[in-house]
Amino acid sequence: MKALLCTRYGTPDDLELADIADPTPAPGEAVVRVEAAALNFFDTLIIAGKYQTKPPMPFSPAAEFAGTIESLGSGDTAFKVGDRVLGYSGYGAARQRVALSVDRLVKIPDSVGFDHAAGLCVTYGTTLHALKDRARLKAGETLAVLGASGGVGLAAVELGKLMGARLIACASSAQKIAFARAHGADHGIDYGSEDLKDALRRLTGGKGADVIYDPVGGALAEAALRSIAWEGRFLVVGFAAGEITKLPLNLVLLKGCDVLGVFWGSWTQREPAGHRANTEQLLAWVAEGKLSSHVHAVYPLEQAADALKALAQRKVMGKVLLRP
Image (cartoon, rainbow, N blue to C red; front, side, top):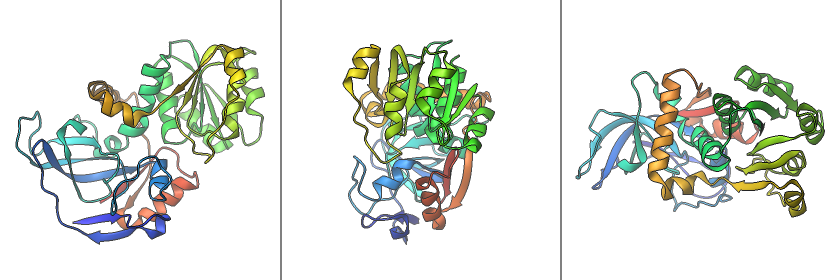
């Protein structure tokens, strides 16, 4: 089968397309024929050796996928050959077939296509965990989302709106703000042309945002924290800006706020039942048309370098998929 392989740390152009042996399922595992594999920003880091997860080489990028079960290992399971499933593997999905534990699979409703399911797990899963389990977002609260047009940012806009929040989308261009507003944001801040702190205070009448969702980091993190509401919740989701911010703790004291880490990947391992319940809820919302699971573009496996470069250059609005 065809597989995209990282054989040494480097750039997207250093990845290799190779023929490797088909996998066979161990007890408790399934082999899934991959119909679509989704890329995320952290894939640009994992192939460069700059991510907290460092798989043994050679490995394939892409942490999530959707496809059809082709075979099952021994052991009781709720799945059968032919089931349509999505899966979260952490890495390794940029190939034609994957083998992984059935505990990592969730059935896809008939009305949800592979492309919309493939990109749901990481971005929407991270965001639902962040807003529901960590921040405990309440209807009527104000949620400010940084990087609002990217994968997790768009998920935060849609899920926040679905949960009844007043949504302020923050992004680096007017085009990205327009995209976020088309997906439910009530207000927009173009932090490429205006001061984020001042704009957040203005849009909240000086009160500040109740919850700030930050997958960007860098200088924007402190600016956003300075505009948070009393007893607000600041969600640390990621560092797409490339800089891990050092927040002044006096701001946390003066605002009486909480700074909450969102390490979704570790949470899925520690709380598998919660992860499954959240994923099933997300799939139900997609089936009901309440979430877009927007696909920016689909690339063939041999053009994966172009897909990863688009992510690194922040040109993506929604999800980027590979078609093995």
